[in-house]
Picture 1: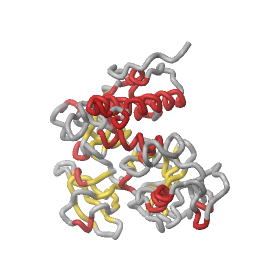
Picture 2 (picture 1 turned 90 degrees about the vertical axis):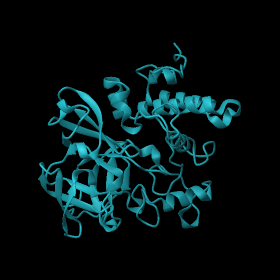
Picture 3 (picture 1 turned 60 degrees about the vertical axis):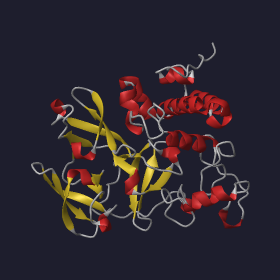
Length: 346
């Protein structure tokens, strides 16, 4: 029996892509590839606006179903459960759908290559990348792989999200992933902490992926994150969200949920909301940092403070003032300050 026909106007992600609910990852990729090429606005100059709306919807369906965690949340709770990466707002170029134009274009480029229709392996990681398991011989002097466009090689060398070393060793470089093992400072996430990746721009295919902290690399000033797929990435604290427990506080739209425990499973940088799952009653929500009360000892990253020297600084919560909705944090330089609960990323 063949695959069901795609119904791009459906509200069901599976029907949008024309796949069954038991579809494999490869079937989902194949369906996206076919539909993305068909409805890409550049391929439909006569009706660009309609094609854009459909293209965004196809991208939203693919981005949800290709990720095991998001797919499970979608299967259990529908779009609200999987909306951590998109928000549900109109405007800002979203054409009435949850996924923005920028997000859809990023997914397309990551899947097909740097220019959308050029080279690259499905999933967005080029073939023959130095240090990549299974890479093929034929590297040129300086480490540039044969056949890789120069611009893309520079992209992998210079990307500030992923690479701390000058050689851009996403997968651990010459050492094959063996890292310096040293005690992590108190302001760092501890080894084996579960995290979700977000906010990467040039390698957006990793956004929404889950992993665990392998170690803190002080020289790179990045975490080594071990993905479920076995890949090891080096990432800044700003691009990681802890899968931790929080207490819901200060929620006016659903005050009955205040005081409830929720599990964080994602973060949407565009809406600045954490995707959480309330345990009782089971409910998926998008909460701002100010509605998530963290525990003493949590590692955080400072944001939105008037002192710009503190922007992006890592810190640890050493005290929680519930009445004033503030944390006392100890910064990585040893300084202690008091901040509002919405001035941290976690």
